[in-house]
Image 1 (cartoon, rainbow, N blue to C red):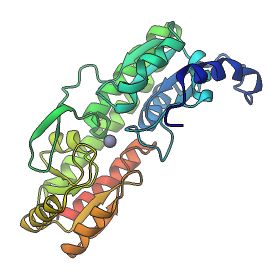
Image 2 (image 1 turned 30 degrees about the vertical axis):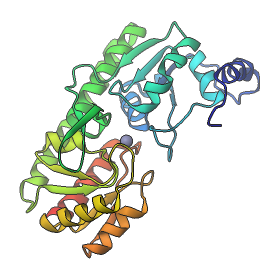
Image 3 (image 1 turned 135 degrees about the vertical axis):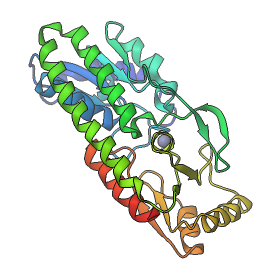
Length: 289
Ligand SMILES: [Zn+2]
């Protein structure tokens, strides 16, 4: 599957519609997104008016995932593609090819208006390339939701009022989440946390926290790097190492054992965005109080 030829994908995509199970010959608008969190954003704005296709499915990593023929089919029928736009590997590798399949589609850049930052290593130093994980900050999520709404209004102006009302309701929920995170973190002892995959850079930026990533540029730490991380963890009194279902390697457990701490799973790609960030908040408060 690694080198599945793109032309073959395309042929399969065009051949598939006949044998697809009911894509409901409805008047729903086809919207394609890269990540599950974006599907949640689209659904909250568009409700039943759209048929959402998520490119990176549950459990898959947006750093390595490759599209399937049935996803290509959905793409040919879509009116809008909401891309993350912040340098997610999946989009860097696939976006041009995906757009070749459907040139009529409106492409919405969810990162429009968001100040992007570089990827950060365990020394807090910025690396080449952008930190793609914009969606993990509720403030960024608010911009993403607004950009999605603007796109929906553009392709379906007849329902503009409906989309805008839904957007405003969801923005209020996100604003409440933002406020609860600020209040929740106001009393913590430490502002430093350690995480395997550096998906919380924007979250850290927006809430004044310091994220120490174990993995750097997609690689496991060297033995020397691991030793330094253990030192850093002890220095900051860190007792919890965050990992996620998609990224939970040996090194997280090794560090946790060395510091007599534990590994806590947090998912940076869950669909139920607000509930998931509330879980993250609870875990962070517990880890840092
Ligand atoms: Zn990631």
